Image 1 (cartoon, rainbow, N blue to C red):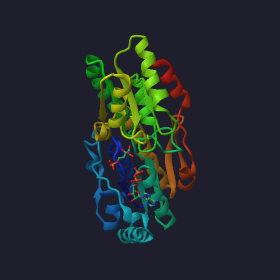
Image 2 (cartoon, protein in one colour; image 1 turned 30 degrees about the vertical axis):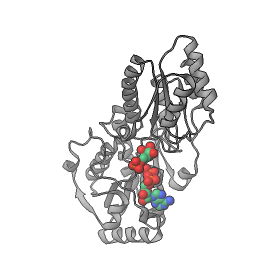
Image 3 (cartoon, rainbow, N blue to C red; image 1 turned 90 degrees about the vertical axis):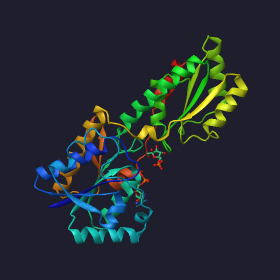
Image 4 (cartoon, rainbow, N blue to C red; image 1 turned 60 degrees about the vertical axis):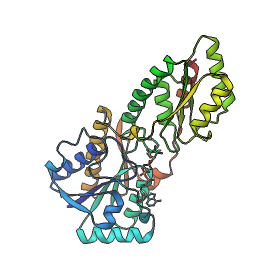
Amino acid sequence: MKTIAVLTSGGDAPGMNAAVRAVVRTGCQNGMKVLGIRRGYTGLINGDMFEMNLRSVSDIIHRGGTTLYSARCPEFKTQEGIDKAVAVCKKVGIDGIVVIGGDGSFRGARDLSLNGIPCVAMPGTIDNDIACCDYTVGYDTAMNTIMEMVDRIRDTTESHDRCSVVEVMGRSAGHLALNAGIAVGATTILIPEVEFDIERDVIARMRATQKTGKKHFIIIVAEGVECGGVENLAKKIQETTGVESRATVLGHVQRGGSPTVRDRVVASQMGNYCVKLLQKDIGNRVVAMQKEKIVDFDIYEALNMKKSIDLELYKIAHEISI
Ligand code: ADP
Ligand code: F6P
């Protein structure tokens, strides 16, 4: 392949810039022309792209967000949208594309590959919810951000003998909540993958720890959990236990910020690997990390895999946070 392009798509994640840097530098070092597409599939459809060189990616390795910008592009889910994108690729002479995003973006990459534009996708999402992949770029930074934020919440929660109910991101996956929850010593962690009962898993646990002298509580709730919202949960806890309770939705603070070492390193490895695949004319692949090694899968296969939550960790969290 002579000309490749790179885009970031879906929810942004810390480390996306490090990945773009790796893609651009690997491409340029290997004699390829590299185009940066702005705003994901929207930019591809609109032909919003520019040629990048070694210096275009200077001073971005440490920056959160994505300097290529991101977008959600409903049009790309239609055959018409795909056809427009393919036409742009043909016109500009794009031989292959590196897609950095989550599983939605991977579906787009699969469709483009099926329509004759080879794509290699790599996981950039804070959720760590990609089945074929032990680790997604952005996850470590987000977990550390959550930990820092909840540590602060803990200071004030403890000072007032309160209960803080904190909602963390993870659309339909509890990996962030579980790992951050264990790191902040949450009394209870509610995640979508594990069935729960408010009376048994929140109220009774609080009462049991109260008997041992505990006066303040942190409850971590993953965004995807159906509990009527953290405000209502905090109200219910206050009414039932008498412990003054507050709700905090951490929100987009979790998605920003400078990437951690782990995110920068994994993003650099994966970005480099993506280009090496395209260089060998290999497309329709997902680049992933398994047991600390970078590997690749057929996109279709990758999208059909299922990821489970670490139930052992869930058990440990609740055994020791008492
Ligand atoms: P993420 O990549 O973080 O999972 P989304 O699910 O929002 O984020 O997907 C990002 C973009 O990928 C969508 O806006 C759309 O353009 C494209 N996409 C998502 N699902 C599909 C699909 N089933 N077919 C084709 N493109 C898709
Ligand atoms: O997929 C990443 C993520 O941050 C999820 O954890 C969250 O549910 C979603 O994106 C929120 O997306 P947005 O606010 O950008 O629509």
